[in-house]
Image (cartoon, rainbow, N blue to C red):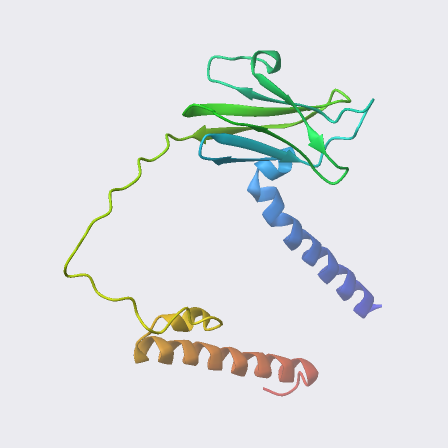
Length: 182
């Protein structure tokens, strides 16, 4: 009886701990059901919230700062599959825009603001007579954090932290199995 209450209580604690980050995150683009991205002067939107009704997924609208509602923006029909639907606008001038997706069943999949920046001018190549040759070590694939040479103090502190974690875990597990021992 005592064990079942303990398991129930720990299960509820784990469920509350798992739900905490989602409740603290607040509203986001993922929660709204759309994902907007820009590449140069192209704005694209992807959603999976719409269902096909009468052969249409719905429409997406790109609203400028002076456009107040869905019908005033540049509208594009969504295309895609049951997994994801998308739309894109090309030749968008720099500025702040709002992307709104309206599914064919009349429900909004969400809205999200996006900033389109001016294209950067190509940089003029610089010629330097004191340039250094590229390192000969290559990509060093698979080394992860070892690509940077950390000093012995950093490696020693990291090793001490890992060692103390292992010792603490072993002590905790030993104490749980035999609570009358230290």
